[in-house]
Picture 1 (cartoon, rainbow, N blue to C red):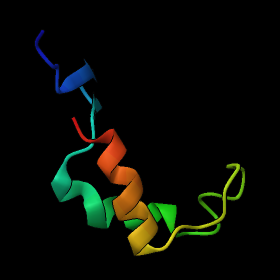
Picture 2: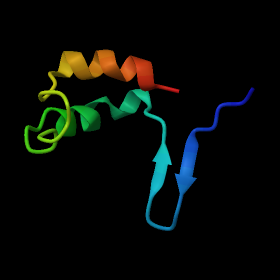
Picture 3: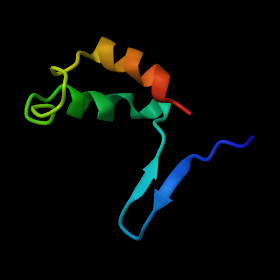
Length: 58
């Protein structure tokens, strides 16, 4: 079974699975109260983002 890294791609957008190098970017938005205001969780700490990212890395 092969794992696809790119899920969808258009001229202006590429959807792909998280990679280890995405940690800082993920933290910047998952720790922002305005960004997660309508999510079922509170803003995350860097440690929490790192733990969550482990489950989502392809």
